[in-house]
Image 1 (tube, helix red, strand yellow):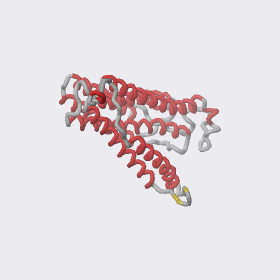
Image 2 (cartoon, rainbow, N blue to C red):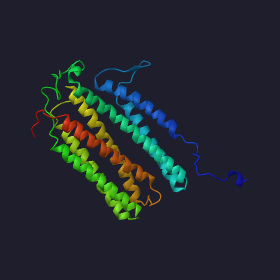
Image 3 (spheres, one colour):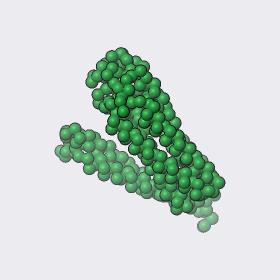
Image 4 (cartoon, rainbow, N blue to C red):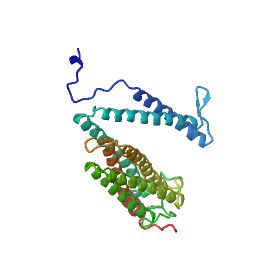
Length: 292
């Protein structure tokens, strides 16, 4: 009888799990809550079945469900790996899944680059879409002062390139079973990620244009803002890896979680390089620079 239940393949049959259902419920609640939150911010109402759901609480309840699901689901995945469920075949498929996820993220940013290039390369046509401020047939639009790319943006570029170097160092140290080097490299990467976010927040607070006043501001903040969000997510991802590394959670042969975080961070680095050259340098070429 025991032989009938013995595992004779390299695949991992997952036990029944509540996480997919809970994640779906959380995403649904958060989407509904986001609509109500935006109506609340604008002073409007959001009536469903006679109830006014224009408040911020539903969104945060959904967000809490999602965060709880993420922690629980990934904790189960870590336990499966420690139990030996992540065989060579399972590990390969996990890598395929991460590659597909990053590919979807690439297409996400393609959309924002497309919007920026569509507005900048066809400035005359974009006048019809820019009801707040006419572009004047040029890009950047008339009256727009842009950020100096050789001030804070180049500073952030150096920060991200250094962080990519540090995470590569940490990965190399892990492969050579140098735990101290891995922890040091990860700690520096997390610190540089936090520094990048602070610099970008400072830049946003002192930007000479706003999101709502022109199509330049809208496309700029959407592209760079979503990148900043990905930096924040990647920093949290690496921070979790740092905590796991301190607790002895990785080995030279079993470290997919760290590898996935490193891939994601390198993706964030590459996207920033495109943003820096396309939006900060090329997109602001010839426009007056903001002082300070």
